Amino acid sequence: MHEYPLTQKIIKIAEKYALEHKADHVSKINLVIGNDSGVLADSILLYFEIIAENTICENAEIVIERVKPLLKCKKCGQYFERKPFSFSCTFKDCGGDGEPTEIGREFYVKSIEIE
Amino acid sequence: MSSEINVMESIYSENEKIADELKEELENKNVFSINVLGAPGIGKTSTLIQLIPKIPYKSFVIEGDIASDLDTQKLNALGIQTVQINTGGACHLDSPFIRDAAENLNVQDGIMWIENIGNLVCPAEFFIGEHIKMLIVGVTEGSDKPYKYPLAFEKADVILLNKCDLLPYVDFDEDFFMAGVRKLTNAPVIHISSKSGDGIDEAVNWILSVKK
Image (cartoon, rainbow over all chains, first blue to last red; front, side, top):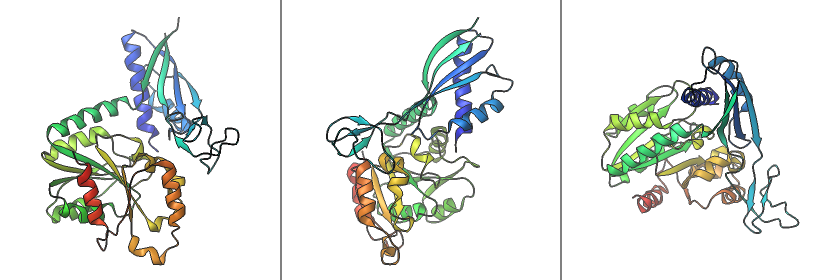
């Protein structure tokens, strides 16, 4: 829902680093977006084209690295992928309750490529 | 020639920096801040109207809505110092909004309540300088909400289960609700009715027990 202002922030961050390095143009922005970050990657791509127009980031390629969320089992300590509608640990026959972790909530600019 | 520059910067970093500064500023002014989250119509304002008179500190309220100042009018009419933020469509409040509103309210020595935009999704994602998050949910919403909107529950420091006076009339499976909540958080769940005032004393006592 809030991808428009978030896309503006992505461009702001890329601009800041590009200007610090005296670049003429940003050709690529590498993002990391966790699947549980609440951010819709497709919306970022859609807005980016519009917002980046007439900026140093115009026509930059957006590369998105997705991260699958992991829960941590309270019983055996293993990290595991959550099955839909379940919190149960999938490691061997553990079946303990998993708790949410920060893995899968990433939302950051990893790097940019400049010219 | 193109070259790669390492950035590793969170897209939320600007919001978080302002939120950290604001929290520190609030502490310097002896203000405890509560971010109130909940869906539209769940009784966020009605609960504030019940809680505030029972709190032995001055209250300041920041009302967040997409449009209108109806809630602000209601609170100001009760003598509660309130300012309105209209986001004009944005689904959550972020910290620059709160910093400006706190300055407008001239907060000092008390509790600053931030009634976030009615939405169980986006407000949970943004730290806005608060000390605690208070989630208000209701028996009318159904018992599956912790499963469908886990982040709001996970981030909550306290959960008020509102509209409990309607329990005899709705199909609310409290065991299923609590099982979902307990997978996500150990935060206390307090049964209240913002209409009758039931449970409000317990909520007030909990708030006073954590207030710095």
